[in-house]
Image (cartoon, rainbow, N blue to C red; front, side, top):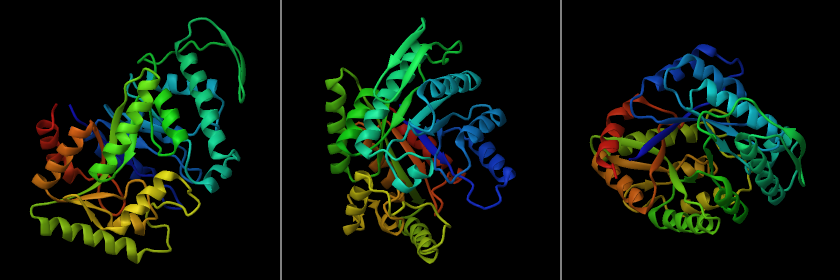
Amino acid sequence: MVDFFTGLQPLQSDETDPDQLIARIQELDRSEVIDRVLVGYSATWPHNHATAPFALALSRKFSPIVAHRPGVMPPVAAARYFATLDVLARGRLAVNVVVGGSEKDLRRESDHLAKSERYRRAIEYLDVVRRTWTETAPFDHHGEYYTAEAVKIRTKPVQGQVPIFMGGESDDAVDFGARHADLYMLWGEPFAGTKERIDRVTAAAERYGRRMRFSLSLRLFVGDTDDDAWAQARSVERRIAEAAGTPAFLRSSSTDTSVGRERALALTSEELHDDCFWTGLTKLLGGFANSQALVGTEERILDTLGRYRDLGVDTFLVTTGAEAAWDPALEGFLARAKKELRA
């Protein structure tokens, strides 16, 4: 079975409009093909610890993936928060642990650790979180970054443990994911690069006696003909180019020194890879994580998704348009994809 995720785009205006957010949540809740929705994190966005519960209260089956940075709150507090939210969500919660990213944005929230040290802290953080979820008797923890005594929470996750999703390309990220991730989130890459990354993470997970699942993030431009699909893609490309120097669209910060961003930008030396993998937006958006796209007819894109499926990807995080948002126009195609890509 193939799953499809998408993203709940943050409100970008200076004056946050709750009605706009409500409309997005209700639209996603009506979808019959979207399995989970990523609620992202940035120190400048509305806090997802508020928007995720808000979305759950408004919806019937909306299943959030709440992005979370280790370090913004102590691990026992995080374990308690997510356990409570999972109960209120009736077991529909997942957590996307984000360790890397923009140094500037991390420093906004007083996180000044070097990247390698952040990953070391994150391993300890998740060790404590998972133990808090599963231990039945109080326990003490005395580690390098955290000390806690008589740890015990009365509300446990419905799922036993909340699923942990993460991504990253550095050696530290791969080791962290191999230890703790239930699903490894990959940025869009051509087939060869995707296989290389899957093989690398799979081998790391096996060293810890774990099995890994994989998702791939892609922006889709689907048309009745290839020309129609390319017209959509080029129109979005023009909109983003014309908005250069403005905050109109989400883009990677120049202070983002992640290996994944560098790898994404390296792909832009060629605009088109494989059959329909397009990097035209990647350079414009500074290597933004969800700027790599597939462009073509339903048959062309379905064939490409099938080839990724054969490599080991069983989940796709899909968006479209200049905003990298969900569009109900994708509903019919993704329903077909779910049926035809079933393992």
